[in-house]
Image 1 (cartoon, rainbow, N blue to C red):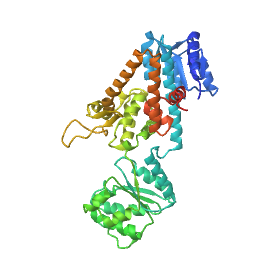
Image 2 (image 1 turned 135 degrees about the vertical axis):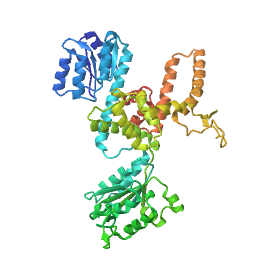
Image 3 (image 1 turned 90 degrees about the vertical axis):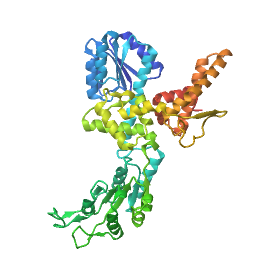
Image 4 (image 1 turned 60 degrees about the horizontal axis):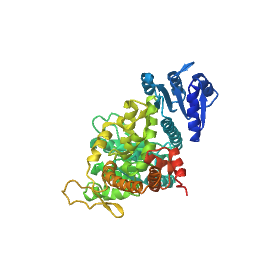
Length: 502
C-alpha cells in the first residue's frame, strides 16, 4: 500500500494528522505546499489517498485537485476547509474530490473519513486488477464457476451446445467464449436472433437465396450458414423459430447440407452450432410448438446461466466493470459507488439480469451528479423498489432457538409471505426482535454493575456480524467486507482485535 499524503501549510495540522494515522499503522507523508507534491509526483511517487488544505501559500488545493485528477483520476482526494470556504469546498466536491473536511475537525472523524477513502482506493486497485485478469466474463459465484469450467472442458470439442437462461443473463457472451476458446477461433463467429427476424425473411437469412428467387432478390445472397463456414453459428432465441423452418434446420444439423431459397444445388457448410433460449423447450415440445427431434439434436450439451439475483456476490465486480467500460466509451472518469449505493445495487432483483445492471451503470455514468455515487443517485427503478420494500409483509416467529419462518397463509389471504421477501422487508421485520433482546441484555448487565458494558456488547455485536459474513462467504474476507459495507482493511483489523483468527 502506498502512503497517505497530507498537504497543509499549517505545521500543527500536519503533525496531528500524521500522529493519528501512524497510531493506526498507516504510512504517511507530509507536504507544506502543492509545489512539493507535484515535484514528488514528477519523481515517480504517488499516494494512495491525498488530504489537502484548500488555501496555502504557493498554490491552491483546488488547483492541485485539478492537476491530480488529470494525472491520477482514480485517486481519492479529501479537501480540508474552514467553514467560510464552504462554497469552495462544494466546487471541489463537484470537481472530483472524494469528500471535504471542515476545520476545525474532530480527529477520530477525520481518521475515519481517511480510512473510508483508503478502503475505496484499495478496492478500486483490486477491481482494476480483476478487470485486467478477467476481460471476458466476471463471476465468483459457484454457478458461474461451473459455467467457466464447462467452457474449459468444451474448448477442444465441436459438439453442439444449448445455452439456457433468462433474457439478459449473458448467453451470447458464453457463446462468444465457447467460440474463442475452441479450435474454430480463427474462423468467423456469426450470430442471428431468430425471434427478431420476420418469418418470411428468416429462411433467406439462414440459408441465403438465389437471384430471382422472390420479388426483390436482385442478386444471389449467402446465408448465415455459409458465412459461418469453418467457424461458429450462434442461433439466439431458438425456441421462437417457426415450426416449418425447424425441419430445415434439423436437416442441416443431421447431414450438413442445405439449399438456398430458390436453389437446386445442395451446399455444404462445416459449422459448429450453438443455440440459446430463455424458453422451456421441453414445455414447448409438449405444446407441439417445437420439434422433439430438433430438441434432442440441439440438447447435446446444455449450459444453464444463472439469473443475476442468484449470483448477488458478483454484482459489485460487475458494476465496477460496467462503470469502467461506460467511462471509457464516453471518455470520462469512471464513477465510484458508495457503500450504500453498492448495498442497494446488490439487493435489487434485476428482472433484466446482467443487461439491466449494465444499463444502470451506463445511466449512472451519464446522469449521476458526482464522482461518488450515493444511494439517492441511483435510477428510479432502484429507489422506488427500496421505498416499497419496507411495506412488504413478512411474518417471522421467535422461538427458543431464535428466528424461524412462520407458516405460510392459505392462498388468497393477504399480508403474509415467507423469507423469499426482499432483504429490506426481512430486515424491517426482524429489527424489533433483536433490538428487544439487546435491550434486555444491556439492562441486565447495567443493573448488575458489570464494567465496560459498551465495549463488551460492541465487541460481541461486531464479532457475530463478521463471523456470520465469513460463514456466508466461506471465509472470503473481501467479499464479507463488501456484504457488510465496510472496507477490506477494516475487516482485517477487526478480526485481529476480536481474536477471530484463533
